[in-house]
Amino acid sequence: SWRRVLRHLFALGGDGRRRFDVGDALSRVLESTKVTASGTAALVTLLASLCTSLGGLVALFWIDLRLGALFLVGAPLMWWLTRWLVRRVESMTGEYQRLHGELAGRFVDAVRGARTIRANGTADREVERVLAPLPELDAAGRLFWEAQRKAMWQAGVLAPALQIAVLVVAGFGLLDGSITPGEFLAAQAYQSYAQGLLKQTAVLARFARARGAAERVRGVLDLHPAAGGTSGLPRGAGALELRGIRFSYGDREVLRGLDLRVPAG
Image 1 (cartoon, one colour):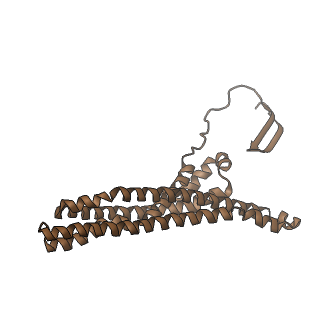
Image 2: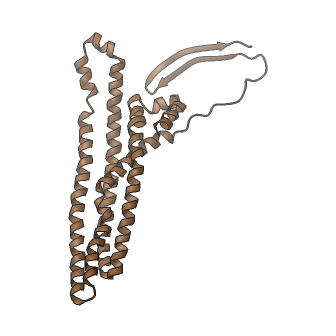
Image 3: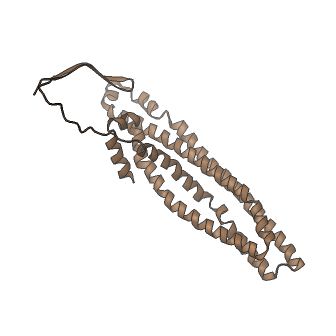
């Protein structure tokens, strides 16, 4: 849940701030967790559809081995189409949410520096800076829908082709007497059930989005907070002295030349 991811970010402390800027963290906590959660419902739908498809395929084999074997000819194409769609949409989801996080980070920076922007009269320039990732975001979104459109029309071609092929073979079986009229009618229904997974293109895309979002959530949860030490100070009257302390967040130096002396006791 988003609470778990947020707690983990807080536990990471400085490591989390260096690894994820504000916009990226917001995107992972709010957007990625929500999309990941939707994957459960999509997975249940896909499993139910898979069971229906397997049942229809077994029934086709029961009626006539040729019907089941013919349907299996299209199985590699179905597998390739499903795998391509899932990988493509998963990749596009990660890229879309990354750009969304970058856009949010720029907006947060602008809100933080609103007084400076107003004082300098640079609002128009700041709007351009904040919206700079928008064309890439638009392109990533269009690629997502293009992948889903392509998969849907390919499935729309494959499903009727398989249906016609099965009915042709069943028709010849009816003519030579190896299939009864009742079995011919049943074959029409069973091949429709067997194609159930082909009709779940939108659900497959939703599941792929959930997988892409889960990768971004995993990117946070896979980082382990630094463990605190438990050792006490050594015995004695020793003093603690630090000289020339320097510290940076990436390329930004925030401390330089700091000395600290803690006297004994």
